Length: 271
Length: 271
Image 1: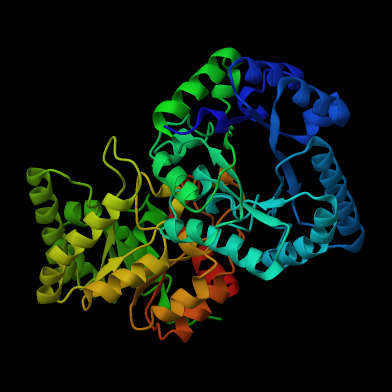
Image 2: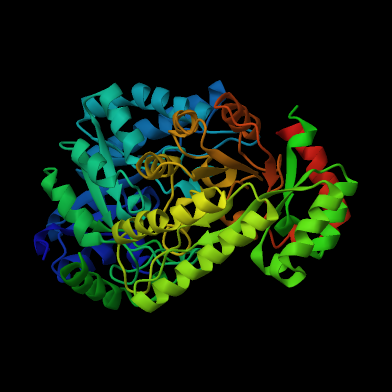
């Protein structure tokens, strides 16, 4: 059984709760971490969010998402960089374990992923000095290849490790079981990520694409060997939070109180 | 522009046509190859199919699918092996360039892909002597990771190349741009597949998952650098047919005459 003190829940998992309600609700159930999104943090206020976290003894285990390195024009790129720097400042103020950066997909008309991959490497190199000086880790997150065209040209842990090799300090990797469970190189790449795992996300992969359209599955309802992947991350030296990030049109409609209790229970029994 | 004599169309692309109509219709438009499925071949008769192919000067560029190595019990496994041996015999009689084998997904309750991958390797090793003695190539096809749980535990060209390394003669690889376009190791693994590429499938990846639910896109309508991948296969020594395999609930409803003309046109302009 994983350490109960290492469980975190991403706010997206209980969308019906406002941010202060989620912070209080998680704390009430013994959950010590929360994954945050800019929209609700900025609505509530960054300073107020930090105060609420501290008052309830919660850690911001992620702030998501920066990145989306899709701009190809100069003006758009300047705007994108400005947005990412602002997110880094917010992440620092929140004390977030990382600013999760998703690489973004393809601009209209672009074919293949080569240019998008280069843009990601270039923009991460540009953003990293600001992350270092602010003391915030940029967590790059490989996203399932089914979203390579529209969400993330970065699909695998192998690519994420290569970016860390190339760009150095300040960059970490977010391992989300939903995105990487299928990877034949998973075990090897998690070991290679030793010292770089900046976050670990939990949920499950429902067997068919049709079921997955509604979103991700609760841990135990799908086919991922979650306990095995989690143990591999621990063997690679990861000692941070395991964050349930259950993006799902099905689960987001349920009573948040019930959802948190199920998260805690499934974390014990299926992770 | 790719060689017009190397264009093939899979029967699934023009489902509204019966098999004899598809054979005649493709030939009428200068298409020299056809991808075949057991259901329609067995309905029409294997010998009659072969006669129709020969009469129209068409080559069976694939026979799909064998494999589906999902059985875990002894009786089920025996039945599965019997089915695959029968498919090999049919493929031989059709003169098919390969029996395409898809590895299959997970039996109910199984977590992770390790056991499924082992079953695939074991069953391919069992089937290969029959393929060799019948003179039929088994074409293993990496399928997009979004289908790892329900269709194919074999997701990447790297895994397919490793299986060829391990199991030797008689095994080939089907490169389908829809399934492998996102792979960061694509260029390297296609070169590694030199002498092993037993088939090459064409279609396109529509940018979002939502669009892809209806099926695959016609070449040119999506984001794949088809010409680039096709040229890489040629550089790796591939000189076989390029087969349009447009599995799509949208395209299958259109007039087959029109669909074939569009396939021929897009092959010229976008491949």
